[in-house]
Every structure is written in C-alpha cells, then in structure tokens.
Amino acid sequence: MAAPSSSIDGTDAGTAGAQSVRRALAVLRVLATGQERGVRLTDVVAHTGLNRPTVHRILRVLVEEGAVEQDPATRRYLVGGEVSLLGLARSSRFPIRAIAEPHLRHLSESLGDTAFLTIRNGTDSVCIDRRAGSFPVKVLSIEIGARRPLGVGVSGLVLLASLPPAEAAEVVERNVRRLEALRIDPAELLARAVRVSRDGYAYAPVGVVPGSRAVAVPVRLADGRTVAGLAIATITERLPDARVETVVAQMHERARLIGAQAAELAHRKSARRASASGTPSSSIRDASSRQ
Image (cartoon, rainbow, N blue to C red; front, top):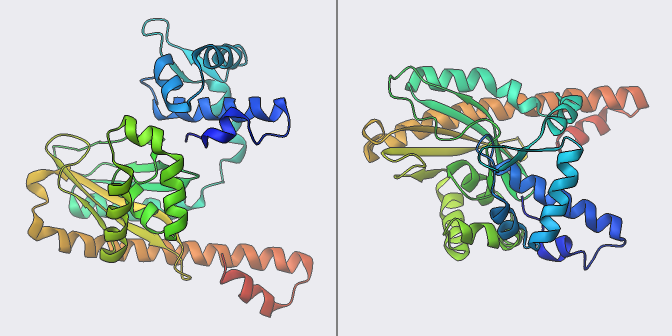
C-alpha cells in the first residue's frame, strides 16, 4: 500500500525519524505486492515516488535487518523472514479466516471452482485464504498474501464499493500512482465501485488469468459493515452470463453465514471484556451491535 506522497516525503512528519519509518513502511508495502516474484528497484521508486538513492538506502538497511531479501539471480527485492516472524506474534489477528474456512471449502466443493477470502488493509486488499475446487482446470489467479490496490480485482471492488463515497475517493487518490502503473483509470474505478454497490456483487467477465472469469460478494456484519470479500474464479466456459445469478445467490448465502458468525464472535468478545470490567449487560449489547 503506497502511502500518500506527502507522508512519504515527510512534509507532514514531526521528525526525521517518523519520516524514515513512513518511507520504510511504504517500501515494504510495495515489496509485499511482489510476493515470491519480488519487485525491481525501479518499480519501488515508481510506486513510492521516492528517489532512487533514498530507496536504495532504505532497502540496504532493511536487508541488513532481515526485513528484506534480494534474489541474487534476478536482483529483485522480497519481503524478508523477519517480517514474517514478527507477524506470527499476532496469528489470531484475523479470526474471519477461521470462520470463513468451512464456507470457502463448501463453495469450492459445491461449485467446483477456486474460492478466495480477501480483506481490506488500509488502501490495499489482501487475500488471506484460498480453496481450490474439484474441477480439473483450476484458476489460481492470486496467492494467499497477494496484496493489490483496493478496487483491483473483484474482491477489491466489493471492498472499495462498501466505503462511503468520500472515503472511496480518498483511497483511490492515495493509490493513483499504483493504479496508473496498472493502467487503471481512477475515475472509471470509482464508477465501477458505484455500480458494484448498486448490484451487490462484482463480476469480471475477463479475469486475472486469461480465459477466466471471477465474481465476488461482500461479507457483512449485522450492522452492514463489510469485513471481507468472498470470490470465485473459474474458466470462462464454467461461468456463462446466464449462470452468474445462481452462483452469486450461493455466494451471498455463504457470506451471510460468515458475517453472522463473525458478529457472534464479536459479541462474545465484548461480553468477556465487559464482564471483566463490570460493565452492565445492556452496555454489552450496545457495544456488540457496533462490532
């Protein structure tokens, strides 16, 4: 996720140290988009807006600290093992993944195609789970951990479409540089988000993988907040236009169940916290409705 140019440049940073931290995080977020392929130095420069010497200096320090690795053959940079190990300290940070797992499995088995679960992280969407279907030709369009600008891909679209218009516009503005690198028009992306919000799902007749199609629906809590995107990707022949409505209906049902279970989990957590602090039960109910 590329930070706003003003933050990366440090024009609103209180100290040089804060500026350096922001820049390092911006670099790491760009590297995360490369997954196992890695990212070229020139691409890091283009996506962050930082100059080449600055990016090179940041990468050198991150490599020394184990937060970044460089492939000796391709010279590309990848997120390092130190970052992965730090993430293990919060392995329970995404309970939605455990909740959704049986529903992803159900969809992949009943439809025969690959199911994906994606969440929002700032101005990015991140795939946090994937289940391949039983059909011999599998569309594994993105890997677990794949990070893309919010709005890119069907899951990213339903997540972007769930935001208030002003917030969606701000997210797209912050991602302008990355979207342009992907040859995506920011205005058209916002227009697509409006249509997705109206329709209740996102459909891509041409998927990430040539000869594939994809569709996604939002996973919402009882209060209407969208917490994830649930998607299916398959070869074109298996998802003709006439079948989209049927597939979407099955996906909406699974998304509803995931959302209900996530809301119940949030309620139980609120109850435990309130019980420990002596909060009245009426306050517990009020708090859980906002989870």
